[in-house]
Length: 316
Image 1 (cartoon, helix red, strand yellow):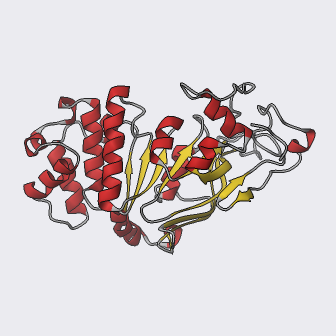
Image 2: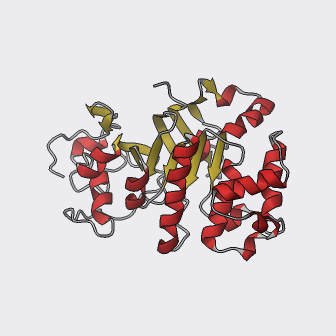
Image 3: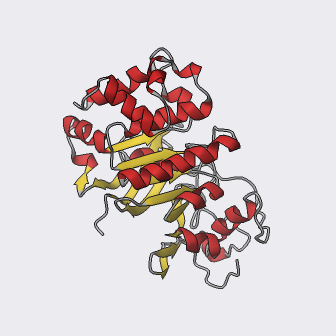
């Protein structure tokens, strides 16, 4: 199947304040990431805070330009588009942010917020159209006159989803869409996203640190650490039999996990000064001296399943 979205060797760096006259340090948020998202597919992106997940999501939408590599949408390089062309492409690529209250204008009614998006993309934006967008996420037409502060957290996230999907995009980046919600509300939002995926044929990059949530949503999973992919493969295989120590450690730390506990040393290093070789080696309980010598490439383990680790003798 032809990919809807393709990332090819994507890196995103941020310059930091100078140290002296000649040194300009760089924060390497994302390093050499490649993956595809097929039409209607959900790709889960997991990793600890500071691993580069949100940055990668924004690069995938063209909200942040890639420092290196390319992002393709239906074969078109987003980095090569003129501003007007990229603006037109936005209709097909939308985002749901982690904090719905921060992403909604508190002074504007929710009906006005949705109508504004429809109008911006040259689509019908009357009350009937806004009411239809709200009905799709389980809200009523009478709600369109109210402001964000008059809704609960779960309802605000539904509004954010309604706004993103009002223009009928084909690709959605959901950045921690339920992490700010009570557990009792999360299930409803996840069920809604699954239903909308089936109804609209929506492709999705689903970003979360919660492996239980990703397991319920994703077809494939990418495990990100310090901006690099440690393991990638079908969700069922990743959760049943992880092949990279970092993946195994994440799964073992999930609430209710029955996997053997695996303790990681220290905290995730700064992306401004990543370790040499394998970026995970400073916390890996299985690291060898050779792990510091070169960055391990992603190696194929089975069709569609890869890992970035030089060791094949690990029992995880």
